[in-house]
Length: 381
Image (cartoon, rainbow, N blue to C red; front, side):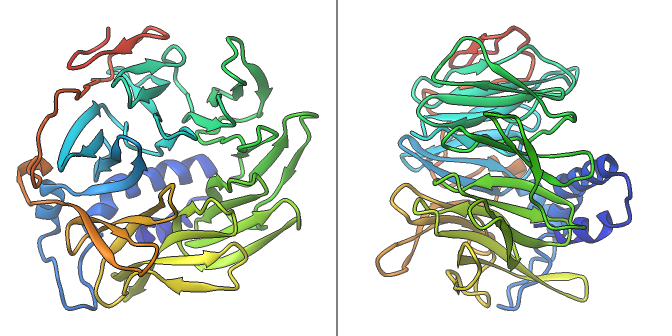
């Protein structure tokens, strides 16, 4: 997690201003400061050049290949057959992407030329994009649950579609929350309130409780597969797990961008180390949900690892900035296997064995009709 943004964000009292400032720092300022030096002795001196060349972020395994985005989060890529295909190109399309349980659908937010937002899903099987709602001023990121469940916010309202229903259940959250995922079993939803506390709503009786640590501005909640735990981040840089069964929080130490193993007992995340306001180490940690057992999956002295995610088979994917590669960690012997190597290029458009692919889909953010799909190589209007 960008530490400069986290430290400076403490000066804001207004929660909305905090989130806006954090988003700006995360998307613009921190990538410029992201790789100034590492203890392995590899130093990137021209960080502006790095930004212009581009780098991959947030690799996620699917049956169709690896879904990823760029450092500007303006694309959704599919990496398959040693090629990087552009499936969606639109402002913010690569931020906070979610996967359906079968990993065939990608949830994202579509932002049009007027800055209006609509929740959307990308079907990796057909390459088509479908808007789930008309464009509005405040729409949330889609989340998936159960066999065929889907949820997203429109303004202050959480809309929950169960089992492919045409009409949603509606829940008034009292405040707009961009991220409000429903638990895999469909029984609870977690979201931020106006004070940046994390709330859990029981969708059966609509009761609400605060779960985040007192005095902590919390964000980025993610459910474990068993629906009994929630990992979340804080503006102080610490990572927490809340257990619904124990009714308490566990502190995992400094960390960001958690990804759960299917057994719900462990998760992986990125840990960074700062010295004299300079980021010197980034590495991947595996931890038990209560923090009692932790291990380094990558060498803090030799890698700049970030954006870890757990595959269906239990292996771990991550991006190494020093190697400029997406790496897979073999589950059996912990070997690091390069999956896709990025080559420097103008604007981040030159990658090893890259090609547009016959099924590439492009969405420019101008779609405005509910249910409209963008087919291969076209822009829906």
